[in-house]
Length: 204
Image 1 (tube, helix red, strand yellow):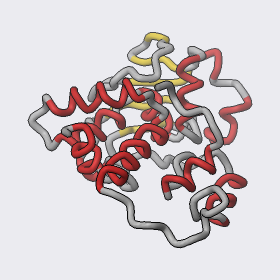
Image 2 (cartoon, helix red, strand yellow):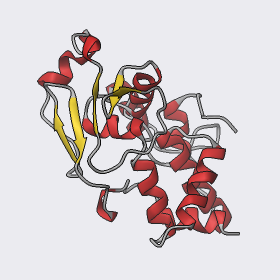
Image 3 (tube, rainbow, N blue to C red):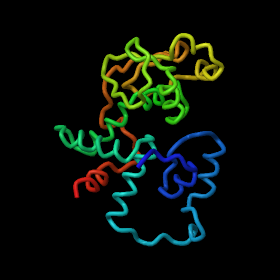
Image 4 (cartoon, rainbow, N blue to C red):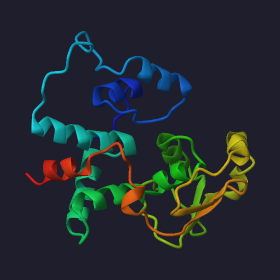
């Protein structure tokens, strides 16, 4: 199963969570219609099974981080081999993706935008240009927008903004560069996803 490329707000309403922040208009649309899409969306929700809950949390992770089903499964397998709590480690691996780091740094306003920046070769990691959004960053590694792209108008607002990066990233927004100070802690992972349910989904 490939990455989801359909309507963002519709999928967010289905899962009950704003998956992306693609702009004020989409956020308003989600807040206006928080019920599920479709003809019967406003009716009282029926009780869903445990499996459905687990599937929903897995889908939240997939759509929020823009990964395929195969990638999601591989992240789980890698997390399961860790000494850490599997669900927590799973989420940390998603946080360590280069495209997510670019998003968290504030250089990109959304994860899809960050993924596109990396795919188009606008990002330099450890001094080398990369086009792989899924690369796992490590503590001590540096990243930045490539020099010839820093003057692009798409970064004008970023340079004027206040840093909003998490504590595990050190960012110079004016220079469009940063460093991974340390790997994300348990408190740094996405709060809108119940990772334990994802563990239960894959461990069946």
